[in-house]
Length: 311
Image (cartoon, rainbow, N blue to C red; front, side):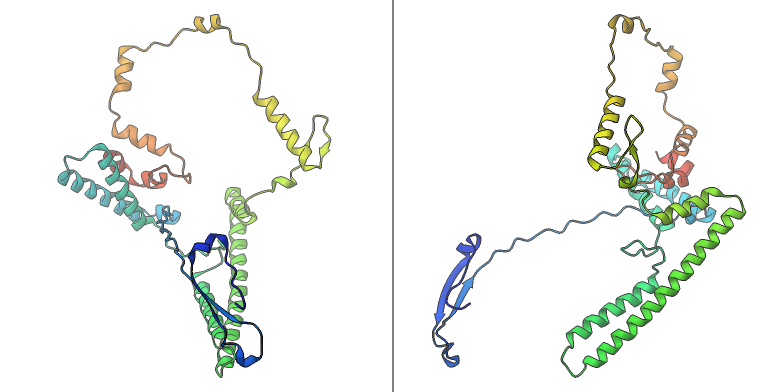
């Protein structure tokens, strides 16, 4: 800085020394003086938090009977070893061992090892990612060698890789759409509309935009203003959810309370059998978000009786 130094109030106490060098600018014929400021900053260290990733399953591996059998046998052996070695564990410790064992073996047998691009493009393959990374590195090398004797060399290398990436991306996109067209055509031929519409919905994206949905008032007139549409939604839910009701306490007291026989109570209080646990696991829906333990329903179903016995 020349003549003076501007310091923010936040860093005013960080300035340790300011000096003027009067002879530093004497050779260039100016009446300004060079100032030097010494500042000491204390930077805060931000702790890196470990990001937890959920288990991604390959649905095609879950239908492989060999992998499912190996998964079940491995779980059975692990359950026997844990029961033999750790007989004094608490319930929470046993459940933690169960979750860790299921997730570890599920990742080993049914984990999805496919590399997925950050943008989520299905046609983006690992081969394309490798060549794109090479192109990015070539561009950085070109920028680092600007105004040098090797600039033409790195520039030509970058342009060559950029052309290769362009051709490969075009070819891969063309092949990708051809594959999807064949899948849709085959699904239509075998009268499988479910698969057809699944592919179409996947290609369409997240669904219809709310801003494009037509909203009508009570008289059937279409509302075009966003403010009027929000007021109409508010009015609709207010009328639907806020219903005036009157409760008669005498009527509530006349409702008989259900009573259970001793036999039914003993049946409900009994420890569930393995078959009942297997039946309950089979009723869980697939492709749903797992609970706090991050164990998906597909892994529980793949374990069969071995999972039920462990539970």
